[in-house]
Amino acid sequence: MIALACDHTGLELKAYIAGMLDEMHLEWKDYGTYTPESCDYPVPGARAARAVARGECQRGILICGTGVGIGIAASKIPGIRVCTCSDVYTAELSKRHNDSNILTMGARVVGPDLARMIARHWLEAEYEGGRHARRVDLIARLEKGEVLEGE
Ligand code: RB5
Image (cartoon, rainbow, N blue to C red):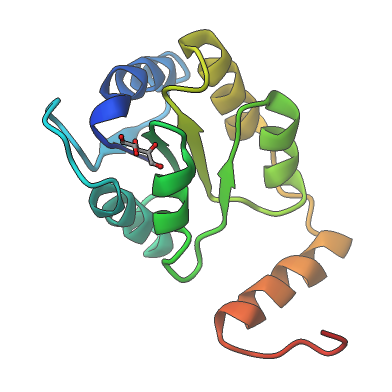
């Protein structure tokens, strides 16, 4: 299950991405916003991020004007690793190396076809583990408030 969310700037792009998920036969759930009225991106962002953190959704794709605000909000939820991205390379590597579980994009930054390509690469990429697992584990320890050796 893929969590989708956006603020008022991202409604159209979210619908486009949902269409792509349908074509890929991937299930998705929309955590809002649902109307064009101005809304505060941390609310739908956190709602979707919590669904990913709880394991109800395996990944999330979140959209605001730049992708930054909703990404910062989502990354406050423990267990969430956000990739805010406008290129295919970063999207793919963020899954392979960083095990990103939320992708955010800016509806005012990327066009629909690029967004679709980014999302597809990210969804098809797999976490490689190995040497990357140690680093992702260090990130988890930071989240718990630990001070890392050598810091
Ligand atoms: C809304 O105007 C805009 O600030 C928001 O969509 C987002 O870009 C914030 O990061």
